[in-house]
Length: 125
Image (cartoon, rainbow, N blue to C red; front, side):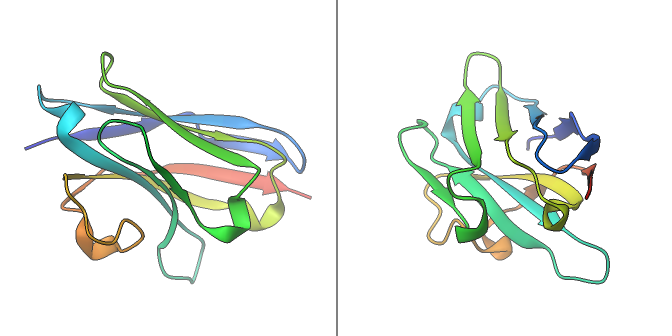
């Protein structure tokens, strides 16, 4: 069992940066694949980024490649999402997700059993 708590969301202008954090409970964080998803009003929750348990491999949806960076600190049980050059279409509630490795399809919501409550990111144009 793992509990996830996101932080770092807020209201920013287009072109600004934000860093989201997701703190995980438990002693086996280093065995979990971690993902970030987002949900805009009236839309389905979509994949943003994921990172392997060791941190060696990262995955991104095309729309954030080159702008967002996912990373993790296994000593701190925390995963981060650095978001640069934010656009209005990045607005939404950002959720942290986790599942024990291996994960077959890191971009699929169904692969993750543990979710945080979400943090709101609003980008004004």
